[in-house]
Length: 183
Image 1: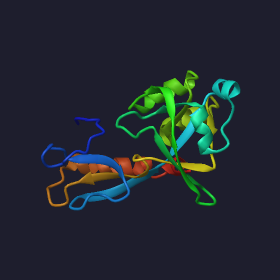
Image 2: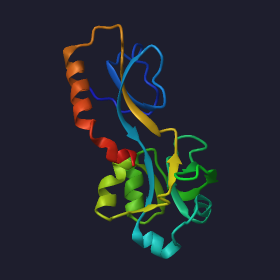
Image 3: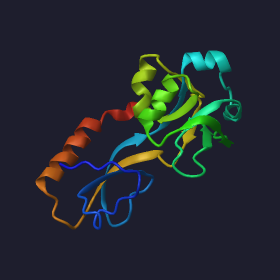
């Protein structure tokens, strides 16, 4: 098995890749796809940061905070939100002293009190459960390009090697109960 981790869109044919996992609303046409689990994001901060700077009550309050964001492309600091119950939508241009394209690095920045950060829930769940971090604005959905269903993609018309079939089955079995990440 060769594991390649990248945020760029992989072309299964030209990149000679058997399987890809992608977060998207709709799988690309021409590929076979199996849903794995929904990917949702969470805003969180350390208790120390919130004690020093206050707890935002509305996404617009984030303009008064140091925010830790993705930082891959221009516009990653423009956060979009949808209220869970009433559907209100808003956008906020955030700023901060730290940005990273890696969830683990953002998590470490949040744990170390650098600000309020956005993370995939699966990256933050353990520290939230252990109360090392506190969820911020839990009544709002944080919308991002990495929000939606995670899919395992593969060629529909090519011979699927047994090792790929085994990996697909393994992932489907192991991730079938990951609904906690959708909450």
